[in-house]
Image (tube, rainbow, N blue to C red; front, side, top):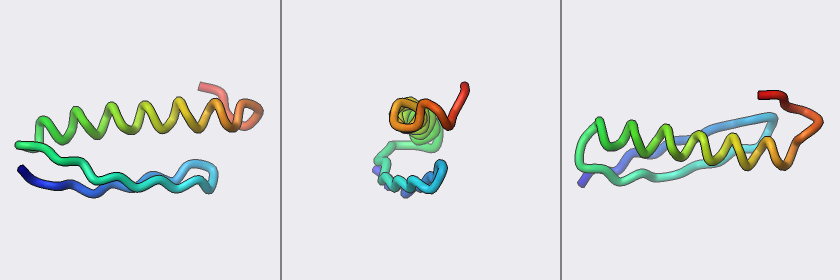
Length: 52
C-alpha cells in the first residue's frame, strides 16, 4: 500500500491528510471524498463567507 500526503488551504484554514491506497485510482477516489468532506465542514464554519 502506498501513502499519499495532501494539503488544502481554504480561507486561511489549512488541513493535511495522509491517504493510504493500493493504486492511483483508489487514491484519487479517497482524495475527492476527503476534499468534499473538508469543504462541507469549512462552509459550515464560514457560512457568511462562502456560497457554493
